[in-house]
Amino acid sequence: MSSKPIIVLVPGAWATPAFYTLLSSNLSEKGLTTEIVSHPSAGAEPPIKTLDDDVSNLRSTLKRLVNSGEDAIVVAHSYGGLVASGSVQGLEKPVRQNQGKQGGIVMIVYMTAFVVNEGLNLIDVCGGQLLPWIKCDENYTTLSFDTPFHDLPQAQQSHWTSALTHTSLPVFSGTATYEPWHVIPTAYIMGEEDEMLPLAVQEHMVGVLRTSRVYRLKSSHFPFLSMSGNVAGIVQELVGEI
Image (cartoon, rainbow, N blue to C red; front, side, top):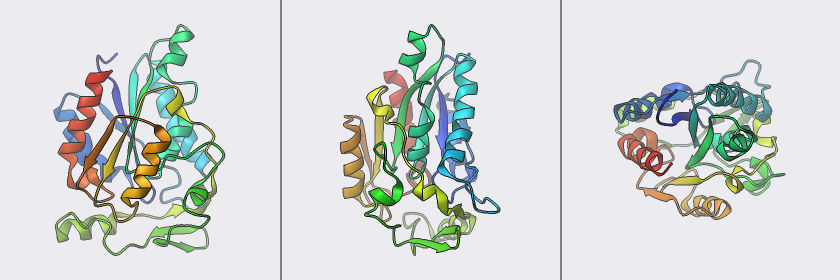
């Protein structure tokens, strides 16, 4: 059993685990163990996977960790925030302690992420329609944004743009079923130069959480690529609070 919480990295839509390997390496350098999950909805053929599929997949990973006595911090990016919120119910450290069990989820860190109230979906929180930079072709959705990685060198922008995959359309209509911020601590990492999830939207998410653990980075929607060391430092600081 680890002396420090395991850091579970939860991708956003259209992203594979490869996007998070730099952050994983930076966290490893700080003595932290990580796991990166892969959403079934990312690159799914046919593209029929749902939010429930992604939640069940993440929950399986979390159950394995906590049932082996590990504590875990979930770090969730973008769409991954919705997945993370739904996956931890009953696995939180206080809940398991009350049951006489070891291990549990001790915190969720939302990183330029969606924080969705129970009963709502991503379409609801985006004003009743998909965001304009989400391109749909039947059940295939892709990221259609000119400069998603604008704070990276051009070569890296091209690399990560080509690395994006499709995500199944049904995930966007999946309903949030749980609000874990009432049970365990949370934090929010904001990207002040995020052109996809504007700062005002992120501030609304922070308001839903009502957390005082708010970190602002001068980054795009993908701070774990352009400011990975900073993100790792924030996570290390949060580990120290546990």
